[in-house]
Image (cartoon, rainbow, N blue to C red; front, side, top):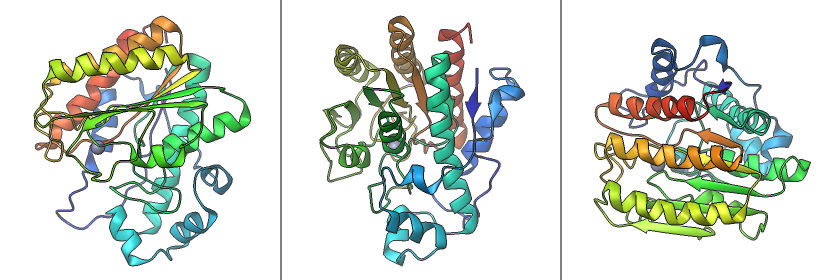
Length: 300
Ligand SMILES: [Zn+2]
């Protein structure tokens, strides 16, 4: 199994910043410590190039982010202060998703210990997302002919508004987003299939609705599934309004990955959100996603 990471680049954040930057390195460390991944299975990616990122984003936005000339209100929407390290880290994260998607097409499964940045729009970011790796990967692979049909399964507690906006009117993609209806973003952009769940939705409600969505994804018969596996539906998440338990999240991951395995559809898993208090809950949930991937794709 080959999985990509971007936590070798550290982004300076002010004390008490609400973005849990530490979770990436903690996850990386835990996966190796628990023997879920061997150190040699974890690979730092090539940074994404301007040509790759601008398949989904305007060149003006790309250039302004890279050279540090974005307007203060645009930075504020992203929610993470600009720094040269943040640029490097962002490009590594996008590169990791591109590399992982290509690897998944070869092996059946791969992942990125970063990414899932589904709120970024073509010309601006938002909600801790600068560029949208899901849209970049989709556009790139379709353009290259590496895939003809791509499904996005976005089970982060927040709606995939940026992905829906960038890929609007692209019939070769099927976008399934399930999320807390009252969670950010407050103005949702329609996906192919949106399921907005009520506050405090339980495992049962979540998993039953998820099955409906997965049936539609399967009927679309994609060449690749991009799985945004954000763990913020967890009951202890500070931002998410849903009440999934750790077991509920396990079942969620298993349903997606087993479907892909059974139907031989390659799947790439991207990290997405997770803001639990304590942060260890978030890390445990991301670790669990990889433990399940290892079980389902036991031959890799
Ligand atoms: Zn989220």
